[in-house]
Amino acid sequence: MSSRDASGTPAPVICIEHVSKHYVRGQEEVPVLADINFDIARGEFLALMGPSGSGKSTLLNLIAGLDLPDAGSIIVDGVDITLLDDAGLADWRARNIGFIFQFYNLMPVLTALENVELPLQLTRLSRRERRERALTALALVGLSDRVKHYPSELSGGQLQRVAIARAIVSDPTLIVADEPTGDLDRKSGEEVLSLLHRLNQDLGKTIIMVTHDAHAANAARAVRHLEKGELSALVENRQ
Image 1 (cartoon, rainbow, N blue to C red):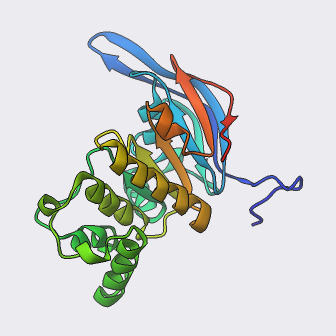
Image 2 (cartoon, helix red, strand yellow):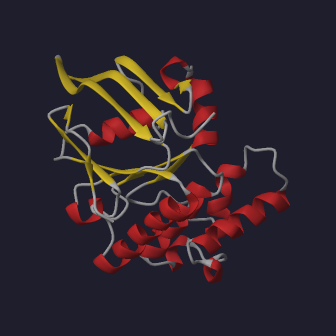
């Protein structure tokens, strides 16, 4: 399939159609997302912004297949993930999604190399192939000299770079990042944003990043704001 449509515009890798979501708090239904519709082009680097409780992390989780909407469809690379069962979703996530979290979610008893290898454990790759891929991913994030270090021996910025290496090691369709600089100092945050920019520009990775930080959002190619469950128009950043 061509990555561009007839007009030359990059074809969407994600199509979100009439998506709504609510949660139940006690006896009350709390609406979070209301009839969300938008596409995300292949190779986009999109920042989702909004105040606390605006639904941005909920939307990210729906796109990543961690949760399901109450209504609507989410089509990623031709697959409507809202139609998959739990086992199908788990398999789809393993093959298509790279996760980056604010607090890294690394295993403290594993080395950097072993943490990055984790997503490959369920694949058919040999131990040698898994190790080579993990080493390549760590080299891409500038941590070839830290492969045997445990999380307790790494700085916050290094921990997040290990998490990014883990996110890209399986060559996913989509990278989703939830406040990836939220727990970092400014210098470490800049390094992480620069790395995400390079993954997008040099490797063509599609990235969706949730952030409340306008400075971090400026690293993305485009920004959308969520406010009270409704999505704003796309605003492109100057690069």
